[in-house]
Image 1: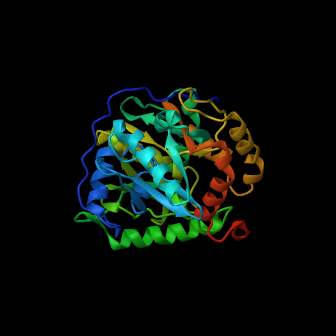
Image 2 (image 1 turned 90 degrees about the horizontal axis):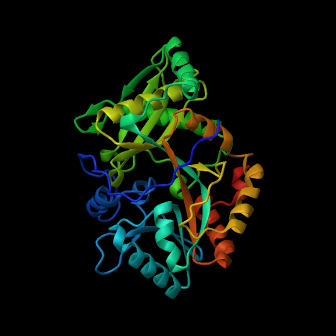
Image 3 (image 1 turned 90 degrees about the vertical axis):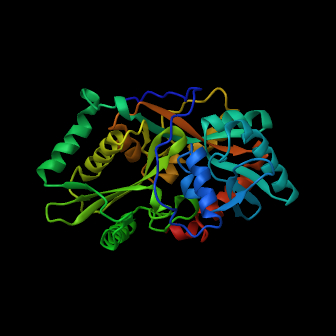
Amino acid sequence: MLTRFRQPQSQALLPAPAFQGRPACPAPNAEVRWQWHQQFGYNPSSLGALSAEIFEQLGIAGGLPYHAAGRVWIGTGDPLCEPEEQTELLRAFVAQARRAGKVAILLPVTARLAAVAAPLGFTAVCLGATPYLELQSWSPAGNSGKMLRGNLNAARRLGVKLESAPLDGTELTPAFRAECAALMGAWQTSRRAGTPLSWVFELDPFGWSAGKRYFLARDAGGQAVVFLAASPLPARGGWYLEDLIRHPNAPSGAAAALTAYALAQLRESGASLATLGAVPLCLPRRPEPQAASSAVLETLLYAARPLLSRWYNFDGLRQFKNQFRPSFWENEYLLLPSKSALPSAALGLLRATLPGGLRTLG
């Protein structure tokens, strides 16, 4: 089935859901960072980036998380500030990087930010696409929902039980954390690319845990087999189903069943939107007219897709997410200050993601 793509419309931000508790993170000024995310969190990657360095500009309430890697400053996600102040913050970030002898890039960013950055001379390179579900009208019925229904039925027949995380007051119980840690260890050893990734790809489901929601699937014997962490997207009135961790021996349909359960729970809590996370190098491709994208650079990037498929199952990931019948898809971008910055950007991203280099992939 060919998935319908829809680019985000210009509209008022959805009301943010209320989140309780304090951020469980040792980052400097954690409370301030948390407040910025609650007010401006629009990009799914924003919460995971809060522990990074933050670039701030005098007169702007907010900042831009970034990661320094060699000669590159990598702005991570969209700036956490008022949308009308993003242009000024981006301009200041690029200028400060230049004064420090660095190249400023940003990723992953939304189509909304790519449009904001275009007048500043940024070149956008589409990295993939992200599916979104409008939860209050979401209903995976009909032929297009057949795969999901089959997975739900399989999980039910095999005795899979679904639950939200047990809490000790407002904290996750030690027993739940221990179960999840064991599950993550089993999952890590089964991956195509066994080397743990760093930067925004680092597995850290309990970072900033106070505002997250957690879900667990158990097999018929009570063993934890699938774990899911959902991060808030306050500026969109929604949630990002960020970490879906499946035991290699999980019953058939368990991961899909837990995802559907989490979506239903979030909908019942009043959330308007949910995203299942990006599909890198997603096909089919559809450009965003307002982003100053480079067809040449995107063609070069996508040409590497067959080689990268040795370590990453692009098609399988898209098929899994497509079964939930997304309401629309949005592109995600890499922003470069110029086309000539691509080699520096590629080296910086490699250092940020794989500090040990490509040889660590095995």
